[in-house]
Length: 597
Image (cartoon, rainbow, N blue to C red; front, side, top):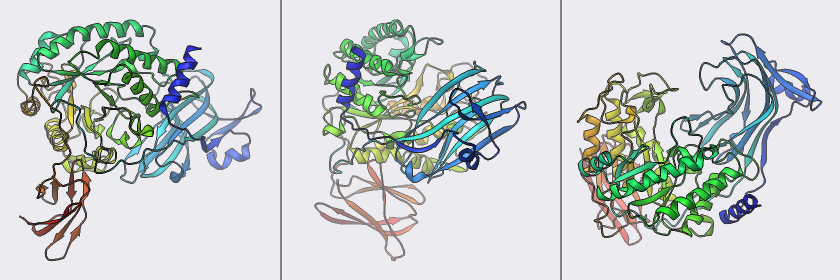
């Protein structure tokens, strides 16, 4: 009874109306005639005795071959939405797959107008080679600029037999959050500008905390709440309560040390937030967990905010389970009953990446943004073939930056394009952003990690976002205290990457000494501020809210419209010469003559 009551309350609290699902595609294999046109001869059709219908059969003895059928889906029916795709399967004598992405295939292949592809697919355990009929499902989100979508069904680089039945793609229609008044200032809920790092520790390391604050001058730590390796099944773990209690005791000891070192803390429910879409019981556990954490620590001065779940992935779904937007709204409302002072930090679903921000609805929006002091966070590891090369399960070492990666030339300009969802999210909803994680693996060749970090931190600083680097004294691959060589396991007092971070940290202030919080929206000045980003790009900021900008070449050959970029405006294709910048604001029109050399 308590479980049903809490979930009903959660649905009411969310205030979000969920429209009826829409069937995008289904194949029940009810007859050979209906299945044959789609699957051709890729799959065979056999009688399924328990339903007196047909099922599709794929089998083989050669694990070096693949056989897949592709079904093209209408992108217009998917843009900007979420779908649950599912299938019933039965297997026999499967061989091991060479890579985690091979094996049984029920996969959506998507591509947006910028050429970015995603491959969400159903998953099955490697440890089980045969099973009876079971249903698997996953939730996937699609961008507004979706160009192509294909459903792939079959078996890839695996021998054995698999039966398929009841394959479905169902769109879950949800309301969208409208843009807010563009004249609203973007607030800041931090006492000073935060620049720091994540920390992964199972104990309160006083020396490390003291060094980070007093020597490195970092002023924010994103404190991960994890279970020990091997016990990290999160909310569905048998020992969850004991692991959480242990982690909170560690943090209880660490918080006074952080305050003494001039550091504030983001409480990050990291590995302990896994499984939050498993079933209704785990979502109730998540809500109750945050009530417990906030009740215990909300009066502690060292806590800046509550990061509700690390990289939430809506990879499981069933009737009654809340989507992340609804669940985050529910948790935030429960927190605000206990604490109104600390910030609430919300990451987007589907992994917390910057690309997922367009699919995130701000909490409280349906009731007039009635939940105060919410910060939105994203993680940045783009492109993954660069940042994660040589990490288990990812591409081998050999990718450099700047360079062409997967057909796209990655440099600072491309990185700025990759950050566009963050710029647009902030501009649309007028909310503060926090870059909770970013890093490039240290052994990327040709000092690529340093080059990548240099460009990204410059863009983050330019946008005025708070940030925490991944990570401080955690896995050596992300550590700036190790060299660029994967084989070198020694730590060094100085590296180029560490020097870069510490250079940013020197600009930090002690958050406990700050006296006021000021908005970080561009100031209204009599004239705009401009600077060249590269040979063909011009960045303009400090413009009154609600302004319209145009840039005209004085010989009349070119007139360029800008794109909004963070807290400023970016013009492309700006060559050397004489230009006129025209700013039309609510208070009038100003022009500025520019000589670009």
